[in-house]
Length: 115
Length: 114
Image 1 (cartoon, chains in turn green, blue):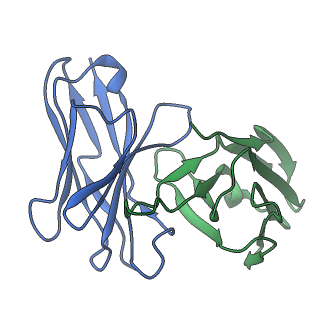
Image 2 (cartoon, chains in turn orange, yellow):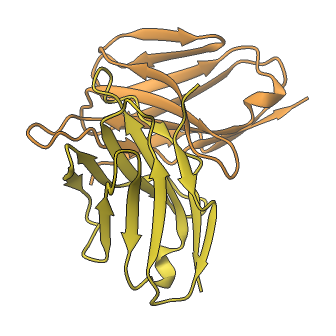
């Protein structure tokens, strides 16, 4: 099956620092999404990207859809303690005729913020 | 803000028993999904459902699994004859026609098979 390689696996940063994480794939995706998951909860959608090269922001979060359509990155600026959690990238490809928009997830980046 | 809800939050069952996990998708959404997440691992796709039928399923979704939309609001996942390796968090998600890729997840049901 399709694999998304997400890095880094985990990171420890000081409050106020900027963070960058990325996701790469051997396959092309139509859409890239970034989710955040807190312990014991479901993934929460942060950003959706639809076009190659697209750069989208959501508050302190900025994400980009790679030109090759095989990668994406997420930046968090001026981190705060509530940014702690696991960040997942997800790629989506519409399956023609199936009416399905299955998401393929990366393994996640666990972010810890030191106050 | 509308959200996906799931019940129960935690289900403990014995190996071989049947379980039904319930979800109420966001009301104007028409695409429904089940995903699972084994502890500490990534989220994996199980099945998608649209227009009252399965539109796609993964290799994980074998004959042991079934889904149903019994009425206008509920979406269920049935697991027959549970196995130890079925222990995981099960997430329901839904998306709307206008932005089908943007899937909104419920809080999950933690299934523990003993």
